[in-house]
Image (cartoon, rainbow, N blue to C red; front, side, top):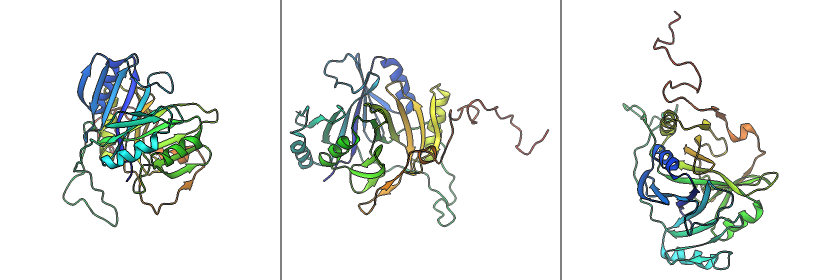
Amino acid sequence: MSVSGIDEITFGSSDLPTCRRFFDDWGLTLVDEAAQELVFESLNGCRVRVAHSDKPGLPQGIEPDPTLREVVWGVESQSDLDLYRSRMASQPGFQDGGVRVGCLDPNGLSVRVQVSVKRKLDLPCAKTNTWSERGRVNQPAPAYDRATPVEVGHVVFFVLDLNAATVFYKDVLGFQVSDRYPGRGHFMRCAPEGGHHDMFLLQLPTPKAGLNHVAFTVRDLHEVVGGGMHMSRKGWATDLGPGRHPISSALFWYFNNPAGALAEYYTDEDELTADWQPRDFTPGPTVFAEWAIKGGIDGNTRRQKDAAAPTGKFLTDKT
């Protein structure tokens, strides 16, 4: 019994048209549109809602919009849901909607749980040829014109009280700490076995509540790059990337998100089991990124942003 991952997120924003363009370019499918709400889906059915800030019933934000207003976590069965119902019943802001139960976390964020509606997928992904293992034979690696995210893979929040938030997610939702910035941040995963983190809680020197980013899982490095260059061609601004995180091993590309903070494409994170022992890290640029490109890659020139465009000559041509 454990949470299986993120089933749905809801943003609050006063600019739905710009958010609609962004998530369409991002690669999500618009499945419902109303005057005050947009609903998108990833490949496996994970939902991204963008609601107008004035929409009645929208959960209260932990910071001014645009930002993330709610996270819905999925579980496998009704019996799992009943267990989380009992755990949440004593928490602030408890709500029981039958198919979905929830409360407020110590940061004031609306947290919900439901029996997961995500679809299982069998997707073709790039195989990597290393010196020791040759998994790709007589087959070129894929190239992508754009990304189609599989799901919302993780969320990252600034928190007012790191210890209180960590205790809530451990005791109420059953999360486990994967790695730590002692006193500053905790990477947490939903279950003993799974990807490196489904949530990262970060306490700044002057604590505040807020969203840092929402991360979308894609198939492989080639889709991170193809998706990022498509977003660049569409005029969306890179915050950082592409690059690689040494803590989780994930490859990433971050973009400014009109629905709140940043959106990340990522892939190839570490897979952990119950045998994993959390490590402690000291914050620093080489800990956050083994390597990274500031400003991104221009989708048309295929070079770092603002670099000279290729001339069409062979690189060995000198004249």
